[in-house]
Image: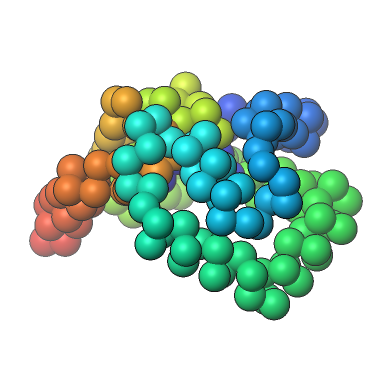
Length: 174
């Protein structure tokens, strides 16, 4: 679901710059500090198309999770290791995964879901990923939700659930 982590659009040599540029534009006007309810609500709206699904209950849960000691510790660790460890490791894993897919080693039914208007995971990168998978996986599908940002499962929960359930039901008996 809108996974820039595996989408081939990021060139490993400039992944950091592209990610920082894209996220930087999105986050430039975010209220500070970033883990407040106000900031989490702003970020959620910036990553969505319509704001659908951004409820006080969801923001409260996100805020509760953001304030957990484990979350704060993880954010600190990721900040320290982002450029030196995380991005290089991610780039290697991504390239290994792409090679594995191109060699036809992926045999699992695969469903990609993307929000057409996701500002953080560009739909063209998702389509490129599908083009990589489809020749080797006969039971591959891609669903693009129009007028949807990063949270298709929140902006269109019934449609999202139906797509996932239909895919599982269709591929379960095979």
